[in-house]
Image 1: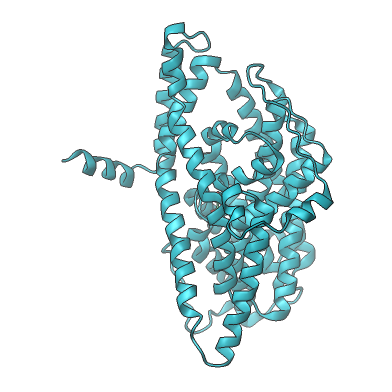
Image 2: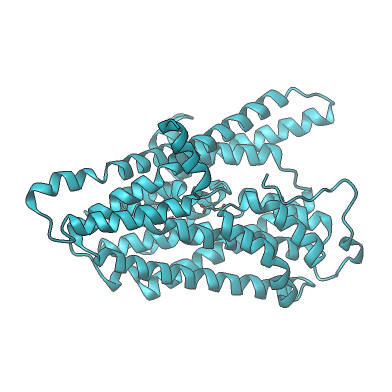
Length: 434
Ligand code: ASP
């Protein structure tokens, strides 16, 4: 069997999480062999070079972040059908839930301060001087050229461009459909193809994550010992707590905002939540989410499809919460205090980043680079988070899916529609990931 075939078989048969677990074990062994905090001076250059794969992966993620958000927004505007009245309600619900998620994330990170449990003295950064000046923000909102936000990784300008073109393209499509024209199709196909292409390249980058984890963990252990990982343990605890609070918020919201009882909601959503946890992809979970909403909970088809389809495109509360917490955590780890305006900037960019994060594994890691850039945090510290992201990604994906299901229940209202239990004709549900 050739080298190449062996490699692809390994990638096909060994799930990414296992590859990362193996990389972690190997990196601990190498880190200990290299000195575990007391490296031999002759080894320092070699040890530092271990970070190269991780730096390359981060660079690639940064480069992909802006096209991913731009294309995700354009693709969403062009392809998702939202009926007028439910549309407004839907946008309000999406926004409230995301803001609550970020508020919970920031609250937990500010109260528990996971980055300060075991401060790592050797990690220092120059203080960030980015503050929030609303007038400057307003003036900066319009980029000097259309392509500039893609070059500068400026998330606010990017969203401005994406929204402007998204709204206009949608309006043109609607007008053409009304006139029986189909001129919009080629542009829709180009955008869909480019979106798929960015996701495919992203998959290649993600395939390198185990190598990146190996290098960065081995380097960190060799140079600094195990102390930085104690901080990560605190971070994991804080994120799990915040995600649990968000789950409680959803259940309460469903209880008071719809006819679905908390018991029905929890037992009806269990299949979808387990699938989300095991695939780390809300898009792959979508058919299971839709079926759970229709068959297990018994919602109307319109509410189930709006929540599941639109939700898996735009609604990523777990991701928003995680990105906000990560920014605060890294700030704390570096001894940088993010003041209120900066935290507001985190809120703003996390909302955008979560909308742009596609429903695929590790997408949150890509858009996180934009949140960090916006508040002036060094993006190289995302490397530390890569080591735990394979697990936290699964947890936040489950919350993303629970968020979509919550939206569907709220759209269904206070009155149950009995006929909803029967699947409408033509709706075929399958377990196959889309
Ligand atoms: N994996 C998440 C999802 O599919 C996105 C993320 O990485 O946060 O919803």
